Length: 281
Image 1 (tube, rainbow, N blue to C red):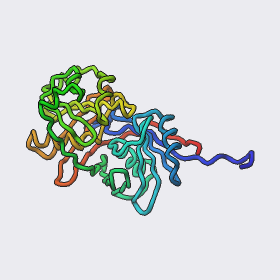
Image 2 (tube, rainbow, N blue to C red):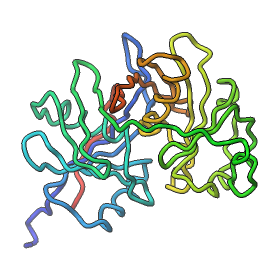
Image 3 (cartoon, rainbow, N blue to C red):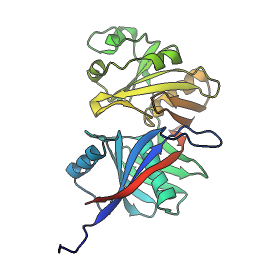
Image 4 (cartoon, helix red, strand yellow):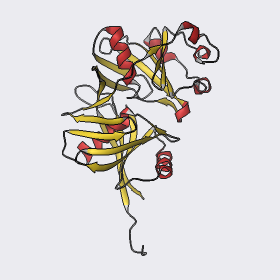
């Protein structure tokens, strides 16, 4: 490269996904921010991880085009690659459709969790994600000192294994809100993360949750789409309905519309672009 040549740049966007919105407006600084980086070719794992650490958001998505409406998609936290991420997938579809104006009504993403589909609606985006069946833990398991759930300052109604996560169900939304995360204790539990959930006290929502994943470098995630692949199944069975509305009660808050199908779970949400720019290769 000569002195007067400009180094090549790659576009990036910071998108707030699963934002809290009503019929008239988006709530600013809500939902879960994700960085979405558009690549012209695959990069090394080390490079991807360093970029994700530089953004220092809960997830950074890396996209590059394969053919037609199929894109390769990988997700990284500041410390590791993960197998499934809802809000960064929603953000990726938003960038392609709303920011880059790629003219498809559906996008396919090739990921570590298989091929995922995003459908572009008029104002929202719907993701088709894997259906994760929660498996109830026995009381004997919960009272095993080695497991770690017993050590948390919670009074579980029940607890479940849900893929890589553990769900702890408590009796009320107030308990979910009041819980002070015991990060060191949660980090000792052998799971990707711990999901805390309860029925909602409000008639416009079915259930609420919070998500803690210190082992993945995320003490508390603002809004976790992948956690709702199992939460939707759990509450669908408990409430006897396939269409659900959920809110994640982090400081930023986030809202999801969910539908449980025979083979998958659909997650619908909205996005707001916060920033965009270019990064050097």
